[in-house]
Image 1 (tube, rainbow, N blue to C red):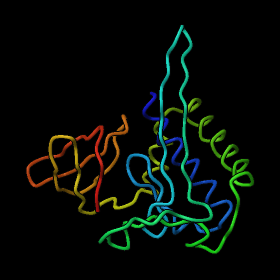
Image 2: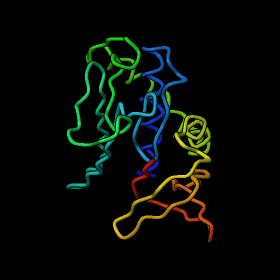
Image 3: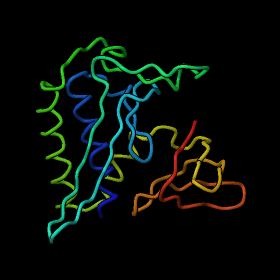
Image 4: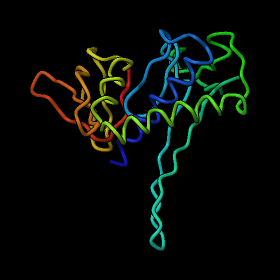
Amino acid sequence: MIALRSFVAALALRDALVAVSGCGGLITLKWPNDVLINGRKIAGILLEYISEAGVKCLLTGFGVNLVSAPTISGDSPKLSQPMSLAGATGVRIESLDFLPELAAAYSHREWEFVEKGFEPIRIAWLRHAARLGESVAVCTAKTTLHGVFRTLDGEGRAIIETSEKSHAIAAAEIVF
């Protein structure tokens, strides 16, 4: 259940970005926890589960390029360069002004997840998935596999179809 919160957070972040920019068609979700605008990374999400002295909590961190984005040096292709909301859309919003939009969107998506389960989140996430039905490379700690990103299963795993079989990937980096 904890890992599925990554999809809740990604949808909420996308919802908030669309709300402030009006640019829904430009904003997609990269499995498992990145948000793209025009195919370039605008945000990432990190989850950290803590259990100490009987207290359990999940910390959700959002890194969002609202006004500017870092530049990756070297021979990196343009599409791998991060992008900011302001750079992609001309919409300039400061983090303290964006936070209420994100909080409201997260509250709604978290309610949906708690009340209705993962399936509505999965369906909504897939509507905005980057490279769904397209060829991708999936890099794990041990190997790289090439195939077509077919869907997201009920446990949040990416289903990648190769010429040999379908693979359910729980943790990896998808590269395109």
